[in-house]
Image (cartoon, rainbow, N blue to C red; front, side, top):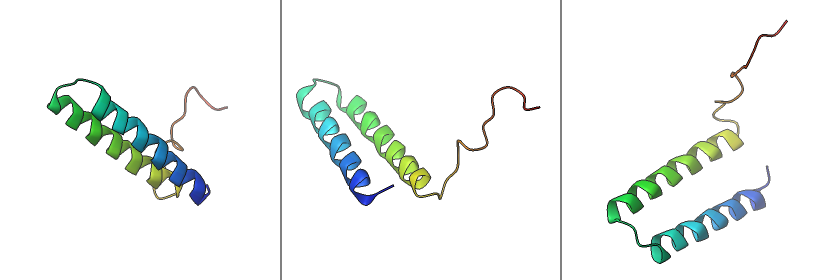
Length: 65
């Protein structure tokens, strides 16, 4: 994964979060929860992208024969 892709992802998520926080009329608590969820998602995504966290590699659906 290239550094440009990571930076582009942060810019896109930042712009989306800016519009959600500024243009939508939501309760302050809902905005805070949404911001925390997005930050946790980005941290997990970064850890997985750089190989420090392998959550999805051990999941198997069905049986292997």
